[in-house]
Image 1 (cartoon, rainbow, N blue to C red):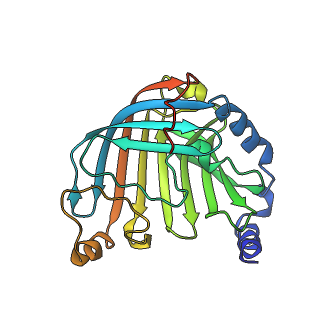
Image 2 (tube, rainbow, N blue to C red):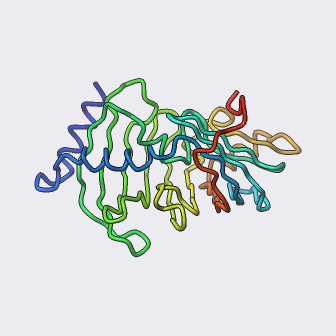
Length: 229
């Protein structure tokens, strides 16, 4: 029932003239992203969460359709929300039963984008609503804001380069309000010393930010056996 309430709210807030069905655009995006059956990527990750100032670390990322994603960091701190949340666009728009409505236009990093509200209709989906900022000319997602049941709202901003034909970013900036997250359930922490209750309280009072600069992708060439086990 609450899903239909959210849908009605969107219909009220979005001007009727702009509330056209954007399913065809989402399906075009899916077709582009579906070119990537799997990939292995390397990159550099910078983590800035409240009082934690982690050094830049090397990371490896693995993806396989439809929604398998794994990030491995070489030591130090690794903070990414769990519960189906991913920095991977393939996973976010992999849903099949959804409503997609236009919500106007906006400039993102100098690019003209179409704003689309994507509402999953499956009540078991952890994602409640995703707002996509779509570069329709280049068929790329420049920004996504996602609201979930368990882990609040988070934002992903993407920059593209040599892998744009695959819909894969060269840089991802992931930001979230730590107050909305259930710690430790919602966050994976790898640290030399465990967090105290006071640390967790301080952590929940500020925003978190994770930046990943991708240095290379190996696309559709197979993955190590058992990588997602």
